[in-house]
Image 1 (cartoon, helix red, strand yellow):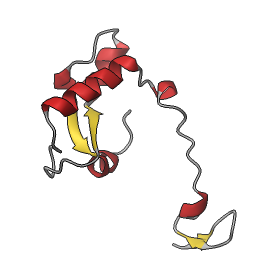
Image 2: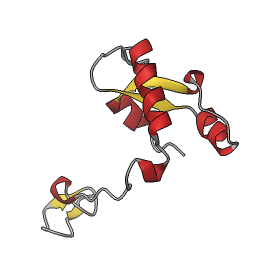
Image 3: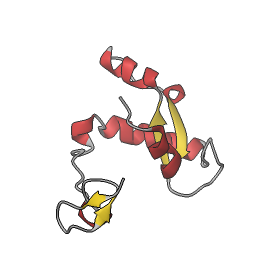
Image 4: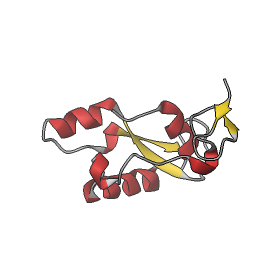
Length: 98
């Protein structure tokens, strides 16, 4: 259902059009991504330089499996086996991390 953007009144499927969408996710650090995660992500993408779903080598990210956050909550280290390399579009399609 199309409705007017809250800012400019342009028709949009969401409450704001793409030009006025607000990123309210907070910083990466505030969402739990620290330097340890950054190093692990880089290492995973170096070891597997392609998306697990489509095979592309462009715009890769490291996606954490549910076990990754369970280990972190238990005070354990997130391991390479707890992440999967995906392109940004496939990672986004999986939805929120937690």
